[in-house]
Image (cartoon, rainbow, N blue to C red):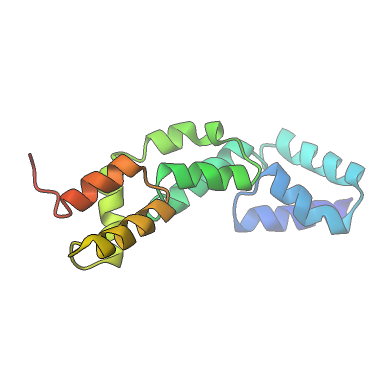
Length: 145
């Protein structure tokens, strides 16, 4: 069990992990009961926290993805997106973030409908909402109204 704990601590030292992630990564190294005991111990000591893992993930990926994609990625990782609700809310204006992501990929506004669709698909894949994508591609330079 001590070896299992050391393995868990090494994983947590690299980055925050959710309980589900650690369970999966430790599965080959111990019994289900041993893993559960180690994870409960780490949670009690404050070394393992799903809320902290969710927040860390959001902060690390916020400059590349929209809120919808971040929530979906959290679900995929076995985390409740509500755990990172405050972190997602603190990201600021979705349109500004979408504009920054778009500007890194494309150097000019879409010239025709085919290009417009390609730009829109890119932003949609990054998890930005349809209304944000429309606003952005309608006015890529972000001229004040």
